[in-house]
Length: 242
Ligand code: HEM
Ligand code: HEM
Image 1: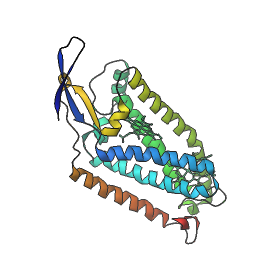
Image 2 (image 1 turned 180 degrees about the vertical axis):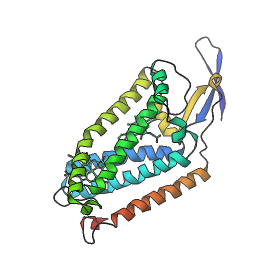
Image 3 (image 1 turned 90 degrees about the vertical axis):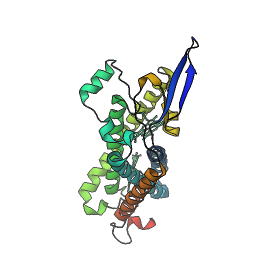
Image 4 (image 1 turned 120 degrees about the vertical axis):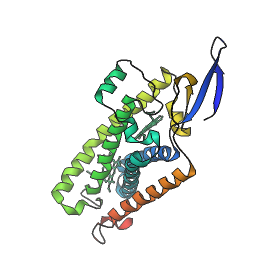
């Protein structure tokens, strides 16, 4: 927890503290999800043989999301759902301007995180049952044709919900940058926030190599589970490219 001092306009020293909020696994999850979601959108628009890559990106997104759900239970302080999920009354108080101090997700940020995990989680799971009527089906599409068609419709419809949420997400980050002068994107890159010493006490997220090793084990497990799902597709079926 390195302590330093900065100067305000009156040249009075203001003690600040640099705090780790986003552990490395959470940051890798975030940028990994961004990359796989972009990959999914590009490949589905290219179509044709690129659909194999759509499925690979989609399954990787699923493994990442499963990891994040488990990390939300066992991960370090700020990654935990119990740390940031709050009652609607807290969100309303925050929106009314009662800006209590938050180093991690604030109540509105938490709401958008939950919405994104649910919406992208639905997309990845419905993809398992989706089919494009030609060459590509998710590994569980064979279970029921009518369910597959219904979930394919919802998978396609959800495109606009995802676009809406990501647009809101980026607008919120830009607003914090321009109005509140907080560079949240940089925080998601290096994991640290700088706080005024007066706003203490605050805990730092544990981001040791032991924690990272635990995260790696968890990520390998969710990756293997996702790969196992692909083996459930009929032999010689659409998943043979995996
Ligand atoms: C496809 C695009 C994106 C998706 C799906 C996405 C998804 C997410 C998710 C799920 C979280 C919660 C993180 C967690 O606690 O695990 C999050 C947080 C965050 N994302 Fe993104 N993100 C996207 C694009 C971006 C971009 C382009 C930026 C930067 C310019 C960004 C910056 C952030 C920041 C700063 C947070 C933390 C917000 C806070 O402090 O509460 N995201 N994002
Ligand atoms: C978070 C991950 C995913 C995202 C963001 C995503 C995104 C999309 C989008 C936007 C479409 C509609 C494209 C359009 O209408 O032009 C689509 C279609 C499709 N996706 Fe995904 N997808 C994901 C995961 C998956 C997974 C895991 C699979 C299969 C294992 C899958 C299989 C399909 C198929 C087969 C279609 C074509 C449906 C049709 O032709 O009607 N997707 N996906």
